[in-house]
Image 1: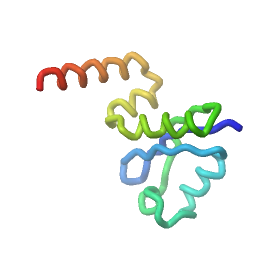
Image 2: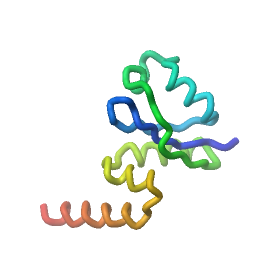
Image 3: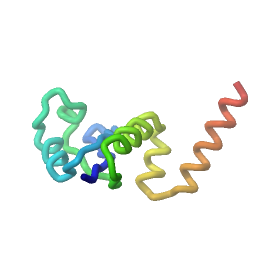
Image 4: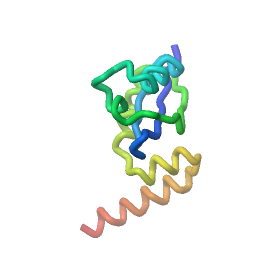
Length: 100
């Protein structure tokens, strides 16, 4: 069964990254505050900015975890579909780390 990894833009201008097997249901839950403990509950409304389909839960969780660690700039490059932009950000981050 396919899984989805997605990025939402929250009402407070933050990004939320998640994964699910049923994207429509999960978006409904985020929009309607079905889970009071969820990050998005007090940050509604939310807008789906990006998603991708992956074949397994393990891959979805791995990709979700990876994206959650990214900077806002890198997430925005992903949302734009700017692969070169992501690479440029990674190169800049690497240069900064090497200078330390």
